[in-house]
Length: 191
Length: 191
DNA sequence: GACCGTTTTTATCATTTGTTAATGGAAAGG
DNA sequence: CCTTTCCATTAACAAATGATAAAAACGGTC
Image (cartoon, rainbow over all chains, first blue to last red):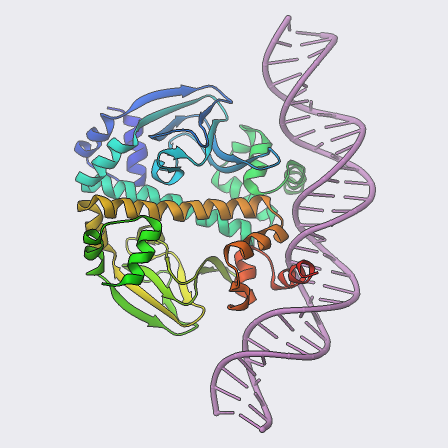
């Protein structure tokens, strides 16, 4: 049994050993090198993912060719559910490894079937969806009503140390500012 | 049978007459006057809603007491699913009628049970969730990477005429700007 | 350790957006 | 019908953020 995944699941919504075994049976380990794109916009994808090690991001490319960071994920978290990042199993987003990463993945449809027959797993799945929305709403409120400085302060509170692990371009884009502004704010806050 | 709700449902994910009848059996009509808060943050709520007439918004109140508009809803749309705007049936958001409104509501748990046993209804439910996320991601990208002027232009494309139906305070907050900025942009764009 | 390409910082200037305050107009309620 | 309140606009100024360019720091490689 994958203890690490069990801990991630329980962190969201605690389920019984027995229920977890059904999930465990679906898991496969995958690794990607820094810089690899493992989910590609407009391409097929039918998996759910647990991030066991490393950092990755979801992003979109705007007309100017810039990568807009939507979300950042660190170890021991769950990537956005397949049902909401795909349409007919075609991805609406890109996901890229920012450091070397290790994922546990499983087939989304098989998981969906577990949700249907198992109440605990269904509750777990709903909790994941809900967390996804909550974090989106939080981010939205931040972008709509906080200054860039306040957003950076919150970001640091939520992701301590991440500023030292990944390129500032990814963080700046996540915060909705330029790297130049980020640099200015870093300096200002360090005084 | 409520034809209007059937049309709203089919607009998201077409389902059979037979499946819709199960939903139809759960529906109740509700009306609220302009200004009424019909879902309150930290209060109990266990309903799903179809907006049949009027305009309403979801919002949060920041520490300064300002209402931050999260989403705007117009007639013939579905309000954000209960599962993602509540935790243990306690609401995380406020919803307020901006004009007089008419809603068709149903018990969320009863609907959840329909999702479990009926494949079409489950697909419909998933499509609703997905649309919710897509619109959130779109909004997020807008706030993170577009100027206020571009956001207003997109807003007008998505919600024509709404600027003439509801207070600009609600729209400005939705766009993440002040009403003064909105007024400036309106003037600039009208030239 | 020197070199290359990339990332981060710094500086300057332009632009956008916010703040405060004043005005006029529209809607709501007595 | 009048008053009161709220809302939208405008102006003047301040603050925040973006654009461009150049310098410095960093990381990987041979």
